[in-house]
Image (cartoon, rainbow, N blue to C red):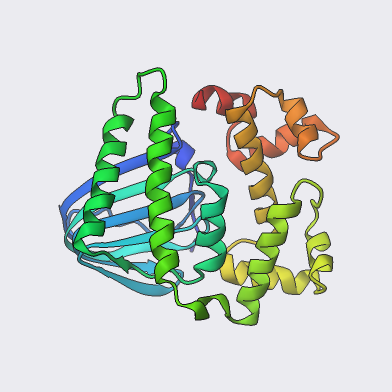
Length: 282
């Protein structure tokens, strides 16, 4: 018996922070029988036609016809069945998802269901993904990577907007555990540079650390400490990618006085050293 649920890491499959695969007329015999797992990145599925069943955090989700579905980092999932399905599978490193989109996808849309698309919407999403994939295969230009990231952001933005427009207002008023999880995630996004300990977040929310850990883990699959490290390392990746700051400067920027400790933390959480990450992405 497994001691833990496997976590799939995108950097083990791609150095670009992005993976796009087109599947055509897939059925149960053609898909890889993958065990239940978590990802450290976002998954976006754009099914153009067919039928697919996915188990997502112990809930069976049926995707019929032309539809969108997204899976956030940490959710346990695997494909149960698929029949004559065609479309796109997109895996995206979290740092490539704009913060305003993340807040909506992770904090507002609490229980994402497949989003059925009308013909016009289908056409827009298809054109955007086809163009993104075309540019992904030809990134040799002086601005190749930036163009791909911009096109990818357009797709994620349109998807986020579609979900937001179709989300019932009652989604915002959920159970107490879901509200606390949302409050914690919001607090974390604002304070991860200064508050590093799980107990500090529990105190801010006026609840015990034990209860906060229980609530967050039951809603996301990971404890409070995981999400604190996740946000810190995500911001470090942004600074490594978008700036020329040294690792020591980045450590201080993120509230660490000991840059050697921060370097070890980055390697442990990201699975690769900061230097290798910067070199690989650039």
